[in-house]
Length: 497
Image (cartoon, rainbow, N blue to C red; front, side):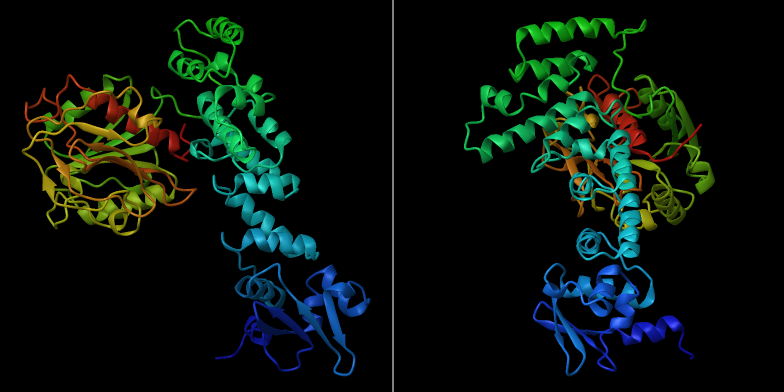
């Protein structure tokens, strides 16, 4: 087969033939060519043709060769960068883009630096947003990072979001964002964690007085008047505000209520549950479907489209008209493979999925068990397992007490059946709550930042109105399901009219 220009130039990389540049990195030697490197950035051009930057290399005049000692990149990352120099095809990943960007700033390589900036702008996550804002002084990238903070709840759920930040002005600027992708309480919690870290570094005891001392300039920026009564109560217990400040905030809160008595929030772009569009895929009888629909609608969710998954599998186009797909089964799916394949595509497109696990995630090949990519492609927060039922169980330990799915969920009794799958959290999943016997009850997982979230409620969804063997309707099962659907819908990336 004829070689392409790409193949020819890539073949020259780390090739001794006609090399005149030696790069020493990690105890190894990489061979390169001055003409190629000079065409890739001003730094290299100055070294080879203008005799500048002599502190960075040694020159063998006899053999006309330059030798560089590289300590800013690993050998693997340097080879990735050099591959771009030779082929003009950027080879960027989450694990190399930050160091490559810094290298291209220190040793000017403007084209590659721009590629790094574009990659980062499209791949901002809760794990790199603060580093981007602190390290990369690129206006377009900074704008994308602030946009991410304003539109996504994920960074505000990261406990140590501010921890380690060396730029007090940056934290001030973030707190002052007019609209933010989370409740104001989350901003306060992240600030408190930052204060605790500062106390630790200063060798100070972690108490209200010391926290107020290190957070003095930030605390007034928290908009107490935008909090709900429950959130306000949590704030007051920290003793980080004076009685006068709390009273003033309480007065402002009263002014911020509309005619329906709902407080005006900071305005996170979270879909109101009255407008949230839900597709309920249920492979069950009509009485079961009506029971579960009635249960969740009692919480204020209204736009639910029912699909009988026994007789049809909705197309991806149909799914994409909804923020979230809520799926469960006790009878046969029309096509278990299609269900899993299409739901995986839906999540990849930005939609969210809520699964009531029993019987949907049993570890057998029965037709009521979901198959396909959603179950095999690393999307599920819980592995499949055997079905356990017949021994009463109830809500056990809540691992993430701040999570929106368990908000106001105080009691849940599974009934005589207490149906649940004996699965385990998968890699990358977050366990939110357990059954009283220790079995996972609520889990979530987001495979990628551009994906929707997959939530598993390890229950059978109908309540005791249908049959006393199901979960007790006098407990908070309906709220738990509604919270899960509302949370998942809020994590959806889909824009739906």
